[in-house]
Length: 401
Image (tube, rainbow, N blue to C red; front, side, top):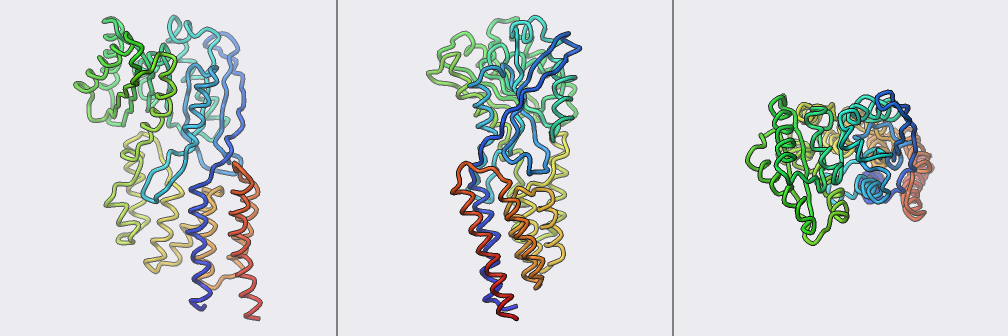
């Protein structure tokens, strides 16, 4: 095959990957579910927001459990934050799409205070199993609470040790000595039995909620002096914020903290060895995700970004079979990632399998029609890239005949 023919098609993978990373998909529709709770002895309700393109995708998603889920502003903040997936540089780490579960309270004082032990059992034994049975959920769970809900979230460490790997406590209080001692004793109890898996804890408070702010800062000092290396924590101050304003800052910042690149992204040296094809891409990928899974306590699958980069690395090493194998895995595991089709089509063109490349691009066009976009322009731009590539393949075939 001539270089003149191969080069324009080789640009396809880069172009579509760029479009995919810059996409702004419509938020998924919210589903309201009813749970007949044996633990609480009554009917309860949750709202479940699925990530954009959930219907097309095959992957499993981390889950955010949001207390006070009946507060629309809290729910929309969480959904928007988990959907913020812009990725400007291949070495960056984008917040992954997540399922958001809004937990409603007919009486929050009972759920989060007087009846807190039973309510925690309801979350762990009824809500989470319902979500993980009915949706493609990873058992990586983030619990978010504000005010009384923030204190409840902190206490999850001893009521359900390790069940929520990340906790976001916004304006949790704990200013009086009894509350402070209860929270810190709870955290110490969890830490003493922690077997080395990572715990993440985010706390925030506002300048204009004096008593709560004082308690949160006291908790910050405790974390600074007592948290073991297996606990990753952050305290975020809210200058000028009152009690009802702190979720506006704390919910998005807490979600971002839980998905910081320092935890989830491949370390620089290993990333360089994979990207630059200096080592076996499959082994680099396997070793990193095995380490990440052991650290978080959850089996974490390779992301589409790293599968795509591994395929490209195999290609640079001259191992076309391994490159194609990885690209096919990428398409199978992440059918919503258009860059995977482009990578695979490029590899098939390189080995002169034009019919195979055409079929892959046809599959990509069909997948495109099922994907959700914020506007029609986004869809039309991607379709044009795919249709133009198909036209080049067809023109080349006609010329050869």
